[in-house]
Amino acid sequence: MKILALVTLLVTFLIGCTPPKENKIRLRGQLADMGSQEVVMEYTGVIGEFGTSKSKVIMTDDSGYFDTTFVLEQPTYFNISRNILYLSPGDDLEVYLTPDTRQATFKGKGREAQLFLKDRLYPKGGSFLLSGRNVKANFEETKKEVDALAVSKLAQLDTLRGVTECFKENERIRVKANLLNSYLTYALYNKENAGTSREEQREWYKCFVTSIAPDVNRLMWDIARNEYLDIIDVRDVIVYNLDQPDFMQGVEITPEMREIKEALQVLSKLDSSTDPEVILTMEKQIKAFQNQEIVTELQEKVRNVKSLMTGQPAHDIIMTDIEGNEVLLSSYKGKNIYLDCWATWCGPCIQESPAFAALKEAYEGKDIVFIQLSTDNSRKMWLNYLEQKESTVLQYNSVDNEGLRVNWQVKYIPRFILIDRDFNIVQSFAPRPSDPEIRKCLDELVVE
Image (tube, rainbow, N blue to C red; front, side, top):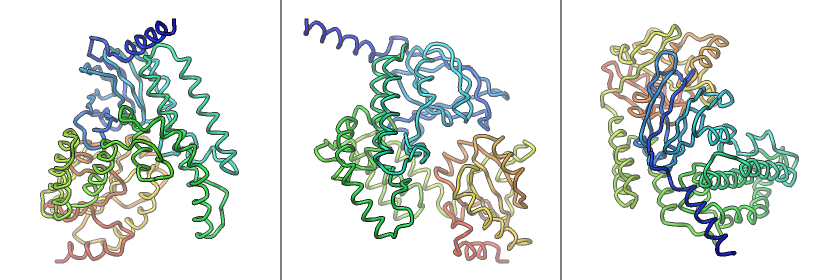
């Protein structure tokens, strides 16, 4: 009887994991307040870290409505803005999505998985810590809180209907990764050593790492497997802690995990430098990687970065002004350009804004134009922000994926760009306005 039960369980799991023969997906509905009629559905698996070849572009009408069909060979996680989708071959979904995930609605085949994911946690916010909102007086109390939240989430998952066992397994692992991340990021929000010296904080942190190591190690044993690396929450927490011996004791660190970490380090260098020597070094390192999909994406990245070197023609960007009119960045050719790529939700961007405005005033009458380019997906949020702020700086909004994220490789903000009057690149990663070095750069540009 035990053997029969085991066979039945195995067959059930395999049926749940095997995609149906129908490999087409139909996705339709409305994508509201996305800032553009061209909306990227971002692939979030490993390869999505390095390029966009597995992402999909959804074209909408003026009101954000769309109806698209595409081939999908196996269940896959995607992001549309901050909404996470789990799409399986054969799904037929009608959606309403905005940058605010709380407003999302789903109808049709595949809706159950999307409704569960609607409350998905964001790793960068400390997962169950909710950016510090669930942090208590000490770690013991905080641990009780986040452990209870994880148990509740797992119980919700166990009772979920209309999804495959593979989906449930993936989400169980995601919950464990979120819990692990909650332990690890507690130190960023803790209230235990407030007002203490740096030396005391360092000593507290050493003791804290020692105290959480057994729980972290236990969870690492559960999630650190190659088959879970396409789950972004898992990948983040494994790669970031790969070289922490206290956390990884006895855990198998596979060549695939190590290569992802090394490839991400290469990507980070390419995301912040157009130095020819740096690019040459990265090219050599890329050739040594075994994952050919990663190699292909990084080689394309190198080609893009080379197009950002000093003296190369500047890439154009489609921008929208406050009235909704489209303007090309190239329309300012004939003047030097200092471009500020920012967003209303970006704290460091907001901090740089006064310095940017001060530079604009200091160079008034000179042959240079200062442009602040919001990358907010929500045009409404951008306009609401501008209403509360007086500024003499030119303001535009753009979600031009091709121009910003592909051509200019704008992955992190704030990002500052200098372009000369011939619309050639001076610096793709220019100094921030608060950096004294920027004055020297601007003076060299506007010299008569």
